[in-house]
Length: 499
Image (cartoon, rainbow, N blue to C red; front, side, top):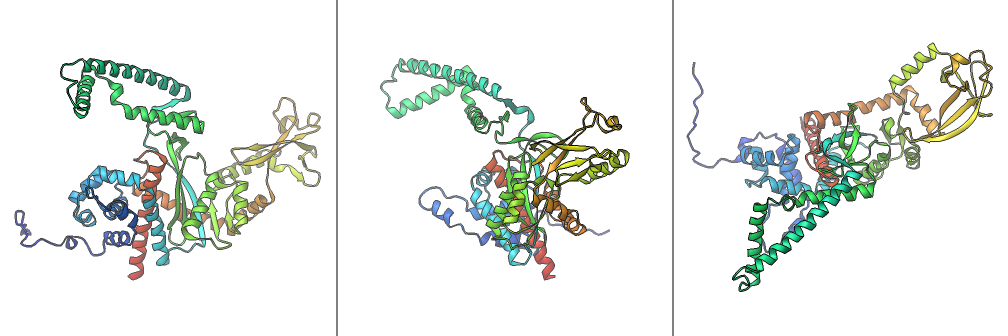
């Protein structure tokens, strides 16, 4: 058998072009041209003048976008790819920024990263991949880069803070004592100011090593503790994380409560392009509908009338319905009862003739009539925070004398009570529309648009946990993920169109 002959130790006579080692249809060329069209004037003015030259933001942007497309988020792994991978060598223009430079750039340039995401939407609109005729909004919980064991309560935080204050006061006394001892040393008075400061710093360095003073080495930890205390006081949070004070305890899809952030997406139905994204600390989605529409209009302009807006039941509340009505948009949002609940209601209705669905409502008299022709009058109403609506309670008048009393109610007073949702006219109209087959078919389309996007970045890009801390930093990280997803879809759509 003959083998292909290799040239292990053979050197190139002429340096090769790095582009010859990359296939001509690689996505890195799109990343290169896309970032090349961005405006970096502000950066060029900021870094103009004397000083050590910095890496151009164009290079770092290309590296970060390509890394997100490849599912690489660690700054150390990205720095290693720049040294070892020809694609990253090409995008880095043969420079080798270290991991700290990459990490700091991603953390400190939120406005630029947001502009990158916005430009991916513009690029998708130019090739006709965005229709803005039907949109879907959804949220998903992403774990924070913090452990549940690192949390403390308000009372514990106050005790820790008092302890640290005591430690700092003791360290100040120690410093004053060391200064007095240092001034008594022979020859100290003959030194100039610069030499005195240098001697002080060196002596303190060795004194710290000798006394093993941990409080002086952990000033960063103390700073985080003070930040956690301020956030706890301002936001009135019962439990707060010391590693990421801005994260919140949120229940994920598996029912586990853990420290995380609530990520929000708005996806266009034409080709699945993300046209708005955000990260918040809310434990549910009901208050994120308005911010998402605001971001959509900020990135894409005013939406046309009768644009279809699909969202799950978590976004159902009166304010969201009124907002959609004001903007003349066409909402498709179901009430907060899933298919499983509907099946249970049907089963219970067959088994129990005194189920709430068997009671008849008289709108003129505002009373309910039970299967035994007994009347239930209005008793009181209250606001249900969980369902974000008003609920009305009706109570029976002559339930104790009814022959079916024991079958109808288990209450100690022997009266039957009904707790029903009090819906506004707009909400009733939306519920009637959602009960039609046409509306259900339109609503089901979100399963093939926004939900696959979430599954893509969680499963394929392994984006199940943030690697940065703080609300602003995780927003930058999520913007990069969404920009990478959009750019890859633009690349696939362009290749399919050209072929």
